[in-house]
Length: 473
Ligand code: ZN
Ligand code: MN
Image (cartoon, rainbow, N blue to C red):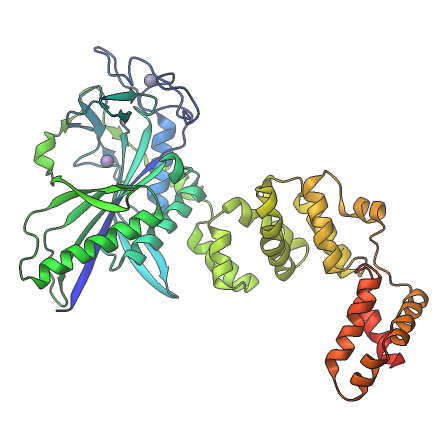
């Protein structure tokens, strides 16, 4: 039986405000001791009242606009009731029937083809605390309690785990471009819940889905989906597709799915309007201003990199995955060329980064310094080979390329008299190579050039060496 795969995602992204969603505790608690970024509000003490963080609203709306959502003029907050030890209030303040935004879309690129993924809604809610289980007992850390989240829900528009991963990656790039979330998955700032079901090819109705909770990397997202597809495929082949909607967890250490429970419906949460917060009425001018201030988004950047610089597609994706790298690249490309910038910012720096473990934009090599070095190559002052060494030196010091060249005597030997002398020596010392070359072996010539370069520690101007040698042999 041909089965079609239906995937929808729900993404929680932590908004990068200074403070939490309802109180003034720090929202940057990653390195803090447990329970030090807390107050009576985010610990759910009786009688405390939440106060809306305006910056979180601003960033939420701007993200929704970047996802092409409509922003209704009115939205409200609701209590989502459930009991869990990391939720001191016994409810999460979320948005139910009147969310911040609706009906958006994102266009992703799947194997060179554009595909539209519908966005159902983006709404705001607070995060819960964090539980650590230690055998007999569990520890609760409330630092994360009350941090602002955007919940982004897609339509069931994805047709493979790969499409889901591509979408998730694009969403990460978008929230980073908007600067509404750092979306660092290692720090739990972006998490995925994936809903998946199968259906016979050609059918229109949706069958009971499985929701896989709390996937915290692109890899586990794709792996969990693949495993669940196989499980559901077997059920279909046995003629008894899944009847009830279920919730699964992902055991990251074992890379395995784990059945958790039958899926809860909205009724289970006893939603009701949050009485401690007034509804939000967003003025058109406020929304329009955020729309006007939207930065260039990954979709547009991708098009520009492909059209303007004619960069190979896989390099484009690499640049888009790191906006600071992208900015660094563009600044260098403008002063030199796209080709030179690709070589030095991506390939050659890649080698340096392996040892030094530092991104080029965080290193002592500024775009000005790199540009200066690249210019020295094109002006024939240094060879590309020497430049690699200079780049490495620059990465380890504060020095500029010019200083290193002077200190180490790296200047390219372009003195014709000197080069001629060396070439003659090499020719005299290698009669066999000359003989081979005269018999039509072009490689023998290359070997001679190589010897001259070796003799000059790579500092000879290769074009001049070529020319001189051609003249002699
Ligand atoms: Zn607090
Ligand atoms: Mn949620």
